[in-house]
Image (cartoon, rainbow, N blue to C red; front, side):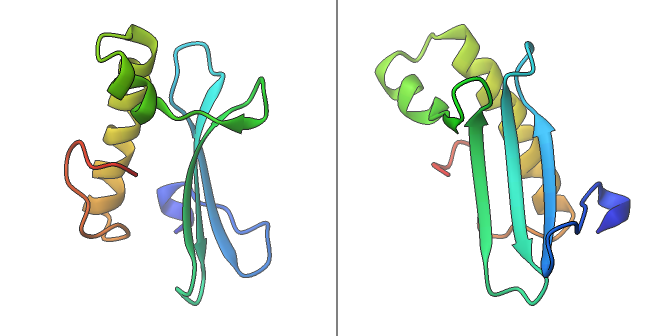
Amino acid sequence: MRELGFTDLRKGYWYLCRRVSTDSDITLNVHIAKDGHDWRIDVLDECFCQPYDYQYLLSVNPTLDYANNVADECEKWFRRLSEWGLLSGWHEGMYV
């Protein structure tokens, strides 16, 4: 997991955090319990310390550039997680 960029600073969990916006304000955060009992994916707005729901924003305004760029970056990471064998059942455009 460390070779993939995960850390294990929180006891019992693997953690990956990646910037998914051009201004670095939005991050994709993946938490995986080492024993596999828990998984969490969050997209967070670091400026406001709250979730950034790019998928909802795109459902309201599909041409919103900022949200589309975040969506592209998130999907890139979802593809990687799938290729690494960590995320199964996900497909392009799936609501996460």
